Length: 464
Image (cartoon, rainbow, N blue to C red):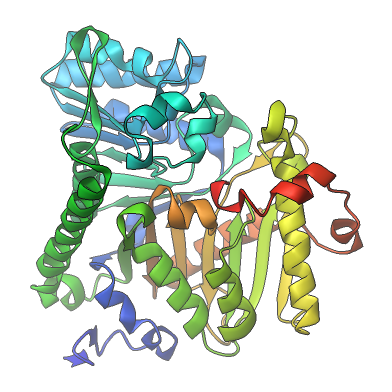
């Protein structure tokens, strides 16, 4: 029996009734909490990838911004190559074109052996934003052309297991760059994300034997490509919603399933805004007495997110962001070196709005700082009224900022659970991150920001 035609009666907790609208946004997959593995250490993240890829029997699929060229990445690829060769399985990789071809030695050249030696088993796709099609790709210099838009999804699939993260496949993210990593073992969810990679690959460039790269349907204009991709992604989502919703027993009827996963896609430049819609709705509909904890490596809230937090949200809120010392751009050459200052300026401005609206007791801001570490974690934890553990989380690649909403391709998931054990594990994950957070005070407000950053941050805010 269903509530409002959507929610089963046994899905009773009143705290979750506020989020029935999720069923109109994304398909729902029911799993048991024991099938969800929360990783909190980047070194374990790396070891897990190696182990999963070594044991894979039918497929390995990866979506990342890029694959690094260091020793750890090469070892992971060696493991993958051995598995693909000996077990004759499929290997599908989706990267960003601009980032994946930067420099003479890059992700594309690193993967060339797979294509030359096992062309029927391996597919390497490079997504390029339609904003850079044609002459724009050559007009903008390397690195700066990456500002326009990127393939930013982080998905690591081995057989029936998918690991959702915000971490790229590179040495920094395998050692002392803190991110989030949630692994789900479920054949349907793995199929969903594997097909998502295939869908994006279908409108991406293809790497071929011998080192050439084949473009995607050059006859399409930018506007035509926007329409084609929008229709493909909407059809993809509706297909999966129908597939999951057509069998209510599959989604809701198994009383052994205590956790519900809603995959979200954000492709702002193509008009696909599931993650934005879900995040805004969750922030706006959280009831009084609840708590929302947010994390982002790059603090640059959209106007809509900021407005929802300041004016619509009834929950108590904490915001955890990177201190400049924990920002990956700290010390970067050229204009990129000003990015940590830009985030500080944006945080100062938001902090002032909190104070002007007398919201300081309800909304608190924290900065992550850990010697030798950078901070790249992002997401949300939802604590219902009266609970000291979260019942839900959003995890994936999006940073709650302008880039994620407008320019990049992002993959996320909302996860709700009624399992006390998984709730505690989610709380421990959240608490571990906040252990290195210090509440923002006068030090943030008095932090000096270079004049050139103050003068330009407004113009370029949607690019970082």
